[in-house]
Length: 157
Ligand code: HEM
Ligand code: HEM
Image (cartoon, rainbow, N blue to C red; front, side, top):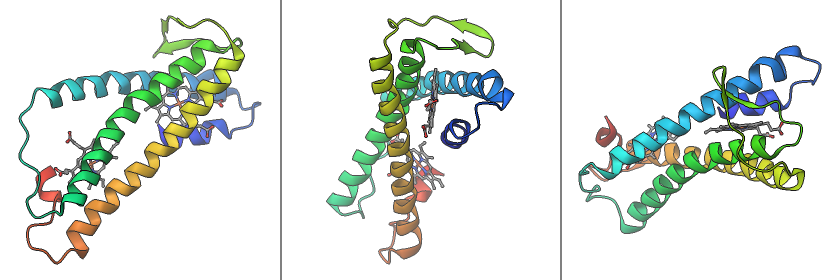
């Protein structure tokens, strides 16, 4: 979604597939992802989790928890802002879910559209930054930590 969003906004407007195929697919997969993330969050809230690693320092546990929670938040907020942007744009081509029309519920307003567009973009690249921080944390604990038992990757596998 991130790379498709980045690439599609940089395509020339004359490329026929830009608005005809790629934008609708970006919106469809984005809405599908929103549904999957909501299901994941419900499952996560109903699941008893293993205790967080005893080896990690308190600041590391806090940072990991904060990063995970913010990733979840952005995984919901980014597609919602995408929907809000398309829905409020006065020249919108409409929103479809793999061909099925989706209602555009917000009133048309191009000032609000610009705000939602900014939020969608900024939060999407913020999500990318957090994903990089998240993977850097895993790599640090696996390859650079000398403390035995600090390899958190095993917890995921
Ligand atoms: C997790 C899901 C999503 C991610 C990660 C994502 C990510 C992105 C990114 C990175 C861009 C490019 C921003 C830029 O550089 O200007 C973008 C653009 C866009 N996204 Fe999404 N998106 C998601 C879901 C959605 C959804 C659900 C919709 C609409 C229903 C949507 C509608 C759009 C539109 C219309 C643009 C083009 C904006 C423009 O032309 O300036 N996105 N998205
Ligand atoms: C190479 C890629 C990745 C690796 C090696 C990795 C590894 C991990 C590990 C080891 C944990 C468990 C941490 C713990 O139990 O303390 C975790 C949790 C998590 N990861 Fe990743 N991850 C990767 C990519 C991603 C990406 C791309 C996302 C987001 C789009 C993501 C989102 C999350 C979230 C939200 C959690 C918390 C899960 C929960 O507590 O419900 N991860 N990851």
